[in-house]
Amino acid sequence: MAQAVAAQQGPYGVTVKAGRKYFWCACGLSKRQPFCDGSHSGTDIAPVQWEAAANGEIWFCGCKRTAGAPLCDGSHERA
Image 1 (cartoon, rainbow, N blue to C red):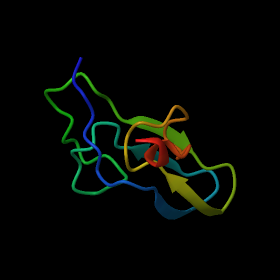
Image 2: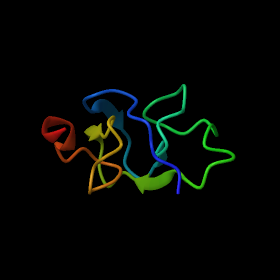
Image 3: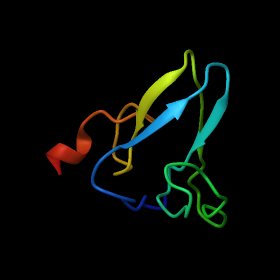
Image 4: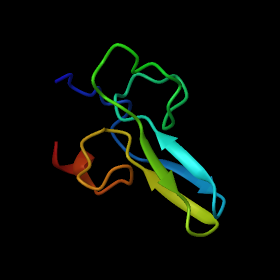
């Protein structure tokens, strides 16, 4: 299995819209962090689909080590 690359050592704050689907980059290779741009092609890592329940700011994981993908769980603090 391929290993994800940390895109940054902290979360990405994103303003989301209720009902919209987002595709979080799980591999760390996307140039559109924290979202997928297809750079995972050729790896066995796939993006994670997430749907916003409400409008607001959400913190998407940047280190790619979260146990609560795609949202930040503070894993970057423990590395």
